[in-house]
Image 1 (cartoon, one colour):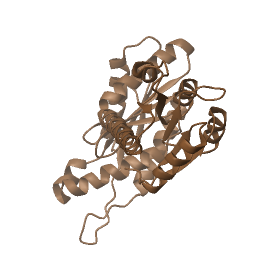
Image 2 (spheres, rainbow, N blue to C red):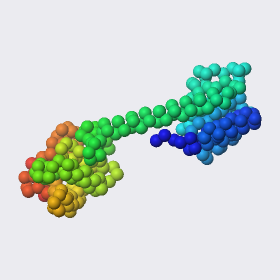
Image 3 (cartoon, one colour):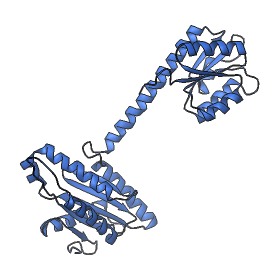
Image 4 (cartoon, rainbow, N blue to C red):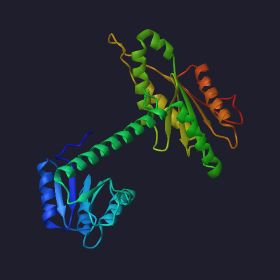
Length: 313
């Protein structure tokens, strides 16, 4: 969101009272929220209390210099700095930019030029923030499912690998759930994919409401979901699975014509076994889920590494 002029705060730092007051009045007249101080120490004190988007500072100041002030601001604050210097000062544009300044102005400063520099710095600042926002959005899209907002299958494999590595280091238990909505194809065929999507979105919310902070849920594909449960043994994972199953069973969907439809879930639960392959771990959860399907759906089944053929009912 573009910041308005009135909400854009500018701080002027110059030990020449006439210069700083003239600049301050000019920038205030241009519509910006501007303040002025006489030294770097006073500037740092006010910056600690209030947020400023741009600081305009002279290089030559009574104690701490403008370049040192610029370094401190760039290190500790999200603010841009415009540096001013006189013709006789032995400071270069490159030196100011290298220590973090966003622009460099020669004194005596033409007020019109200073205002143009200020506008340019603010525009570049906004463009930079917009690029950051876009990158964050793209990164989020790369790891999340667009419909359900859960993590996607690509994220699932990456996170599961991380959790298995953690298991191998610390030997803390690790469990996995694989969930599949029952008769979901029939629901889509009867009521349409738009209504089916509403079910997927609501079920994703139900999953998240049943998990702890360290747990993570994923849309594995279609109507299949997975949940990674770190620090969780099989029995506790089964309890989490039952909580999710019961919550969905209690939900009612209204696809149209005043109907209320119940949808159920079949869940497979398993616990990671030391040094086994990721694929073996996932396949066992998948087999456990199919045991739930075979035994009538709307249930939770658990398989162990030692005996993956027998559900623990």
